[in-house]
Length: 470
Image 1 (cartoon, rainbow, N blue to C red):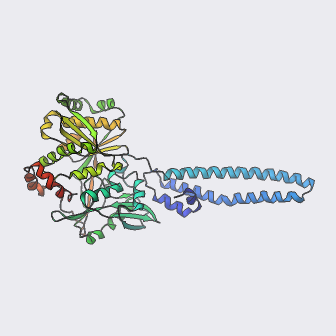
Image 2 (spheres, rainbow, N blue to C red):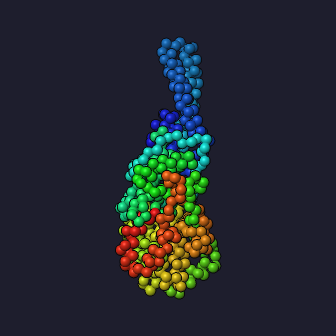
Image 3 (cartoon, one colour):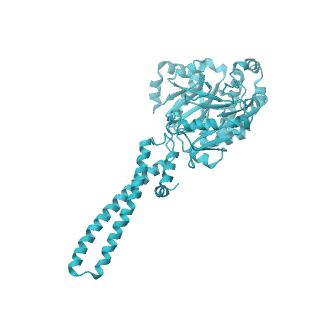
């Protein structure tokens, strides 16, 4: 939208300011009122400038028939009017330029804030959402443009994720857009999964840790979730799961999971001091086995997948297909990297990294059981953290864990802080949905059987199963 158009029509400016994300530029209600007041003052003073210019022209016309004595008075009047006109013109130009600069700054893509996605929505009970909800697709330009300018979005709200899931997993779903006077003020992306084994349900968003509504207030978020309710009947869904870090929504909620985030210093030496002697000693213990770490993309995919598939079999979890990781690696926007650790020239540990702004996340990592006594896992994470600092990241997300589980304790020792996940369930009767995650107790027998299968077989049948799990 052109800034000059915003200044010409106050209603356009008001709609534009309402559409901005609340975290983008700390656009408080007072700041919004001030910007509107500046624009209104500028508009109201334009007639004053035109009037003064008309007066100057009127004086100039009098010179033609004026006497010598009158001409002297007219010159004085012309000088006074010209000075006043120049002063007013310069004042209004400065005000206009200041307002243009402020609005232009608001229109720029906001600087990514690694922790913005974890900030709570403003409570806006005094101004409930009264706009409309549009049901559209992941490729809608309106959604794409708006989403990419939201600093509070997670990596997985990126519009390209919809095409990645469709390509590698075969699933798709709608995006719900909240519109206020034609401007987007919130969105809820969804993916629908359907299978005979696990049923049919929607998730925002599956496979990853974060999702849920993007909104500039709680009222908008609730409106989006409620607008998803008709999809239950329309698509015969048992439930819709909303994954977010926002507390306090009025739906059945699973709070078992937390993410573990570590603030990174600016140098590796500072990180050594931050981690402490115990962690350093555990990581350094692997040095005697002469491990080597490599960072790359698809050239490391075979080695990454060899370790990952083996470890998933040992855990009793169906493994993603290799094409899933290849698809993510090929999308530049995800800044994906593979980290593979070799010992005696054989891959023994690996991690899949995804970066956004100043935050680097490791959604998947694996170590072969035979490498655990060597402390290879500790060594790998220490070198990934070093690499993250070298790449300019300020935060490292170790991924989600069940609170107090072994993986939680492993991540806690690095000095991480937990970020609570709130996974809400939307059903027709507002009841909790049946568990469909592989760590659910109802799958204990299946897990035990899976752990006894040969790895090659799990690589064949695993992808067709896991793509239906959220």
